Length: 388
Ligand code: SF4
Image (cartoon, rainbow, N blue to C red):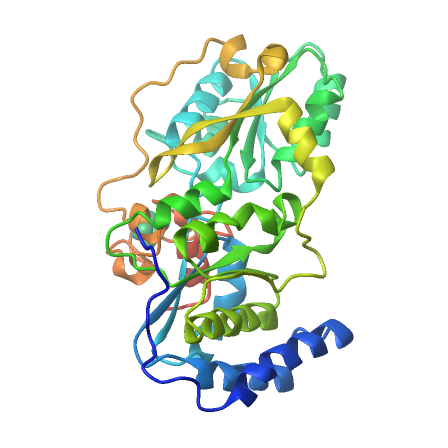
């Protein structure tokens, strides 16, 4: 595990003006909200160039939307060769265990209506997917929101519905709200929510990953607040910056991380102040705490991460599909032979290093979970023709 900010510079910064410009750009962004301004982009790129260390520095984000912004806008091409930005486990569909989908499939094939978010139905599970279960006659429905599923269940009272609830701290509050609103008795929940900070902790323990700073996810942070990342600089001496999703948000975050490295300090900074506060959304946190308790959880490609999953509290057991249908965890397999999603998901390799990338595994015919969702690193790289 890392326990000190790595010394990447031999000399102090020659020009303070380059550091000042990061602050200046942040101030200009706040005033003018020009998060795609080429002029400001050039200023930050220049700033990054001036702050870049002679040795390699590796920053890790944990958000599929950050990966989309970085790849779509070609931000890696703006970075000096010594700066690498890798994608961590920030795609909820990519980390969804095959075992949970297997359970949903068995319900769908036994007369229960299974509803979930669109991308999930294409994710390969142990033998098949929810999409294939639907083709075999199972009632699998794509939901745009959980409230739509509640409406369906109220309308079709003779059917039993199960909602496969996935996602991070961003979607867990809406599951909590619907449960507290007393959903109809014919609706229960297969809860597979996961928490981001414990996954970031895990990344620090992976041999050879050598991360020099975190770009923390903006939308998760709107819920949990900046304070949720305090341990990273305080206990792990890991520079951490919460960032938004516009190209300049990400570039400014890289610039702030570089400044911390240059000054050999680890701090927690918030680039996304227009949405994220120190406390976060305390109402949403309270709703989550009321409905869920935190337990160890299995992540596809990563294994068990301590205190990283949410399950329903005992008082909401009546809504727990695992209890209601006595669902057991059976032998399951998270990947097909040759799939390297477990390495892509922690940024150990980039998608083109997987032999199946854009050959056997494509967005039209995904073999691994990272190729399914618009937040999956392999799919993002494939649709942007990245890595050629
Ligand atoms: Fe997994 Fe496909 Fe990506 Fe390979 S290319 S790591 S099989 S998603």
